[in-house]
Image 1 (cartoon, helix red, strand yellow):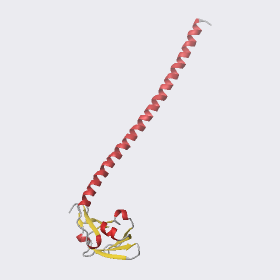
Image 2 (image 1 turned 45 degrees about the vertical axis):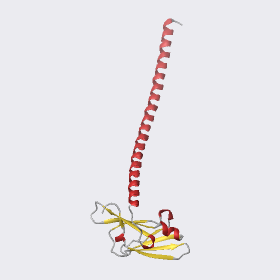
Image 3 (image 1 turned 180 degrees about the vertical axis):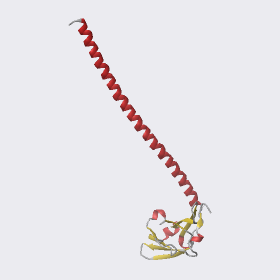
Image 4 (image 1 turned 60 degrees about the vertical axis):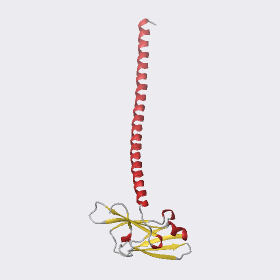
Length: 175
């Protein structure tokens, strides 16, 4: 084999090695870019979730402050609270009703029904003792007094009925 043939063969081998190296580097660069893009997307989602978590923590602390500001329960151990909803054309409130802890421990309650003749779709039922058989309703101020009837159904199927005047409900937050 001549010297020129050896040099030409070395050049071809060198070119193949160079193109192979360029191809491997391009594939690795593509994989790195893809992973960097994925990592950036994950970091963006984590930041959004952290913002949501901070907002929920703030909301939780505000709700805890509201709960601590509630006054004594009316007769029958039924508690009611209301919060005026801002920035709407008509006056509306968020009404919260639940059964007092002392009432819940005095007798085993199966469910609690809340109804108000002032609202067409007013009936609410709760069977969740963990929340104090709580219900929520956003509505305009009802006519008073005794604007809501609360029926407590005990485990032995006996019932206790209490009238609740939502106009006397503890006002929390905005007035």
